[in-house]
Structures are given as structure tokens and as C-alpha cells.
Amino acid sequence: MDDIIPPLKMASEEEEDHPEEEEEETVPKELIDNSPAFLCSVSNLLVTSQFSDITLKVGNRVFQVHKLFLVNASDVFRVMLTHDNWVEAQQKVIELKEDPKCEAVFAEFLHYMYSGQIYMNMETVLPILVLADKYNVTNLKDLCVNFMTQHLAADSNSTHAVSWFQQAHMFHHKNLEEKCHKFIVWNMETVIKSPDWLNWGKKPLLTLLQSSDIVIQDEFSLYVAVEAWIREECGPNLGRAKDLLTEFLPHIRFPMMTPQQLLQLESTQFAQQYPDLYTNEISEAFRYHALPRSDRPHNQLQHIKYGCRNYTDNQFSAGLVTEDYSSMPTCELRTLEFETKKSNSNADVDKWGWVVEFYPKGVRWEGCYMHSWVRMQFVEPKESCEVRFILRSTDAETRNVEVAILICGHQRGVEYVEQVVQRRFLFNAENRIMLLNNIIPIQELSSPDSHYLVNDSLKLQIVLKPH
Image 1 (cartoon, rainbow, N blue to C red):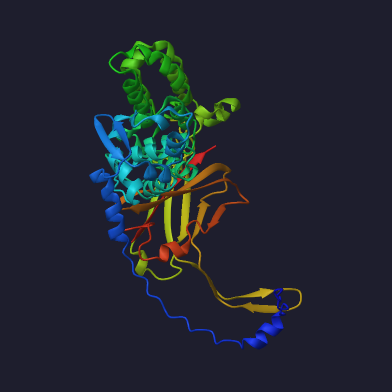
Image 2: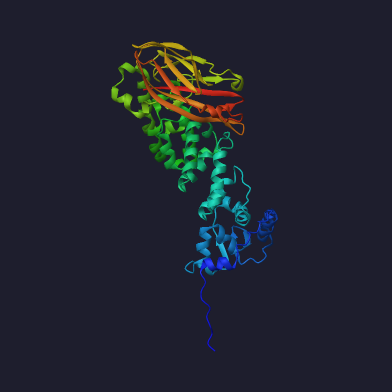
């Protein structure tokens, strides 16, 4: 007998045959987290070498490791160990050539690939980053960069800003590169006293010396630091010194040194040994100090070697400290009066007078009447939550200056220049006031752990560079 195929039922018919069942209630689930114990057991595989399938030789150390963890964490190891056209893919023992400082942290580097955890400090973070860059361990690179940006501020004995800057530049860590560059330029006095100063490469150091934004006590201090770098670069044999001096001296602003410093410079070993490199530069600087600004050639004034950097000696700058910031009244005014030289030449003895009006905790406008052609209207008093900086010239003389406001901060107890606000301004009879609003976000000053407040004090250094 032929099989009888039942007719297909439409969806609506099925719904009639099977009444809609009540949806079961979802039973709440509780997450049981045993990840710390699991990570510990996984990371122990590196320690015990159990089930290892490859051996790494790094310097004098041997590591029994697992391909799975290496290729999971590193793009470079993935290609190296899984592509047949790589010799290492066929080898059971692979020798890796690393810098000695990288060899010293290679065990920690491997431990991170097994556990996602790593210990680092100011000394070890750079070699760890070098390994993370070399083997493209992306997450570890991010951790190192974050650690560096949070530990940039350091005293002269422990700063690594120069080394970190060069590594960041080489591997395109743009954010770290920018932060390191700013720290170096704004805190040059600290950096030149550090052992890390001697780690500069020639090309980036030459580029740095072209900057007029460098914050430093005076030009002579910068020259002394450059000479120390040249001596370190040459080693015991100073045979290369002349070639290096030929490249570096054009970027030293000899006219910005005082006559006393120029005399001191003349008696140094390099100046005595290479008079052909020094004599003209020093003589030209002495001529600069012999002539007042009004008698100097105009084209001379435009040359960069006659331009000031951000010198912090008292000839061109003054400090303003706002103490007990957290308890000071809102909209309170702090003032400062000071003088600066019209130029760095000894022949220019006259000075400019200045008055600073600083509102570090907001500005208040008093109520007043406004007159218009229709009627007179009263404007209510108002307060503005902004940090206002006003610089006034004390007379109507024309003054073409660049103003640099150095704002101090602190990081882990170390005081440093956190930010620099720069403006060029032409003061004259019609414009005797320069006004800057929001030079610091007032919200950041209001925070109880604000990095701008050093022992509850807000510290500014005002630098005026004549043009």
C-alpha cells in the first residue's frame, strides 16, 4: 500500500494544534570568578616548562616555552613560528639576539605573554618597551607608554626623558614622543644635569638646539651641557671633537651670554684648541654687547642667534606664587611688579617696567549702569569661573615682546614645569594691556589632588623675550 503523505500544515494551523506555552522564567545566574587561580596555573607553565614545545636562548639564559602563548601575544612570533619560509619555524631551539638591558628583562617579558602581568620601574620600562616594539606585543606597548607618561617628571638623578623620547620617535609612539619633547624643552635645567642627557643621538640633539622655546637659566648653561655631550661622544680620544663642534656651535647663541661668561668660555680647552671655531663667534658676541639696540644693524636683530630662549634668570623673568590656594577667597586678585631688560646686550641698560594682575580663582564684574541712545540700563554683578592673567606695561613705549608663562606642577613629589603658555604682543600707547583667559582650566585647580598645586601653592614664572 502506498505511503500516504499528510498535508503540510500552515503556521497558523500549528499554532492551533499547539497552544502557546508559557515562557519559562529565567533563573538568575551567579558569576563565579576563579580567574586569579587560573592565571596562576597558566603562568606556572612557564616556570615548570611542562608541555613546552620550543626553547629560546637569550644571552646566557634558556627558556622552555610554548608556541601557543608566543603566537597568541606576538604578531612577530606568530609569523616566525608558523610560516614555513622562516628558518625558526623548523627549529626546536631558537637563539634571539637582544641588547644586554633587554636580556635582563626577557623573563618578565615572557611572563607577561603567559599572564598579562608584569612588574616595571623607571629603569626597566624602556627595555621592556623595546622588546614589546620589536615583537609587536601591542597591549604591552600601551602599558609601557602609559607608565612612561605618568612617570616623566623626575629629578635630575632619575629622569629618562631623553631615552624615552628617542624610543618613542623611532617607533612612532606619537603621544609619548610629544609629552617627552615638552618635558625636555620646558625642564631643560633638570634634563642637562641628568646622566640621561648624554644618551642623545646627534641628529635629535641638533634639532633640539634650534628651538627658541627651551626653558633654561641662561645660554652658557646650555653650552656647558653640549660640550659635556661632545666629550662623552668622543670618549678618551677627542679626535672627533672638531667635527662635532663644527656642527653644534652654529646653534649656540653666543651673543646671549654675558661678557663674563664669554671670557670664561675663551679659557676653555676647546676654545684654546680650536680658535678658528670660537674666535669669530666670541668676537661677534662682544660687539653685540658693545652697541645699544638702536645702533645695531636691522638684519642682525633678525638672526636667530640674537634671539632669546626662555631664560629664567632675573634679567628676563619673575616669579609669582599664590599660596594657600584652597582657602583663598573667590575672585581674589594677586599682583606683581617687576622689571626686565630691553635686550640682552650690556649696552642696553634701560629696563621696562611691568605689572601683573592675576585672578587664579575667577573674576568678578561689579554692577554698573550702561548708557545707550534709548535708555540707561543697570547690569547686574557677575562672576566668571576662569583663570585670568593680565600683563600691563608701565608706560606708552613700544615694546615688541614674546610672553611665556611657565606653570609649575608636581608628579609624585617632584616639581617641574607642567605647561607653558606663550603669546607675542606689541605693547604701545594704544595697547598697554595683554589679557589671557583660562591659562589653566579652573576645574583642575579645584580638584583636591590637582597636579598644578605644589603644597597648595600655584607657581608661575613669567618670562619676557624682547624682539
